[in-house]
Length: 176
Length: 310
Image (cartoon, rainbow over all chains, first blue to last red; front, side, top):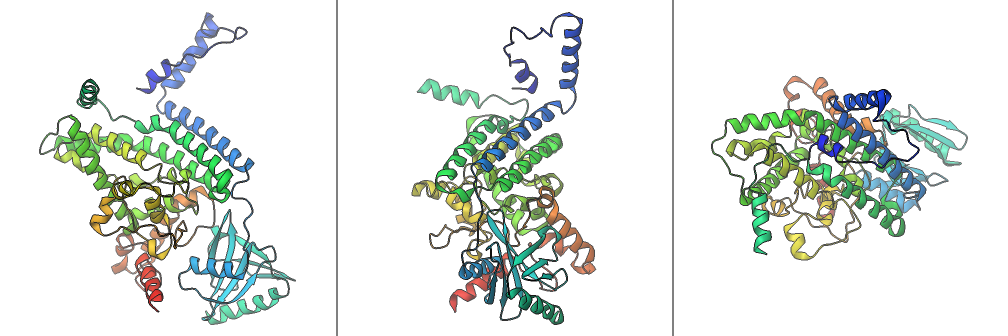
């Protein structure tokens, strides 16, 4: 079925109070304008795209309303280790620092490499830290950014461990 | 019964004047199944969906549809050109449809395998894999740049042996529809015979997984026997639950980053690599680097396998 025939096959009911736009000079003008618009190249795609966009927003609102994929946390150090190993096969942490709210973690392996794990939606994502540039210490809070600007920066509440990790990140640069 | 069969045979014997956009007809079904899966997730697996991830998937699907519509004429034209130079003519009969369904799925297997093993094609395909979730919205997370990568060439060559271009493009769309339902965690296993013949949610979960054991496996479209035949089959193991996404997870829901990040990375590597390695950054497997500083799926799997032996 062509787009043209699909359009013409739709017959929408009209409200009794609705003015008849198909009659009279004004109605003819509207009909002609609509006909001209729908005859434009790509009009069919544009109409379908707008419809699809509205449908996407509705389904998005539904998933939000259902609170699906809501509020995941790192349960414990073992889970943080597992997440690091998943992010980089063979990464075996010897030190772990968990954010107090369990939304992220810092992990160091025996080779001195440091991995940042942070929440990403209902999952977790990780990056190896390559330098201490972008690390900022504010009492118990350590803000970190990676060499990937799309990954964004993360502020971890590490409490007393924050200072220790900040210092060790400075050594990371010296190693590099 | 005979009358029904005759009608079906007759229907498939009618030449097409243009490719049938069967995907347009399938869209209401896609939406209905997504809504059913959301209801399932709400009750049994709330972590199966994430609103922003799903939004990105669906917007990627919408963009892919628009991109596809814009270039459909060019692909159809290319197929018509090949058909004009065909070596034989395949008639519109029921068995030619069946033969093309099989041949197109074979082509899909190699297009897909190449899409994972050659960085140029991976750059176009990667965004289908960037979700860390695996649900029906992931199925719609399709490429915007497949035309630029020229990956359609894998699918239209049957015009050269005489399959009508209209039939080829219609069958290609049917193949796409056939792969929608396999993007779900709601279905655990199908009957054994079905799992042997067809691609299923179980087989395709393996394909989307980043577990070293599962990397670059199960490239099939509709029929699973291609992977068994070409040595890339890996069954899903209960002891190895799939983790989804890409090796270096994006960590962002950005639509444009998902679409273009691999193109950007590849072109940057191409620009900065020594001359003798430039081409390799386009045609070697993703993760390859001339100085061995990166990891491909092969090196990750080898390291993982070595660790299992210890």
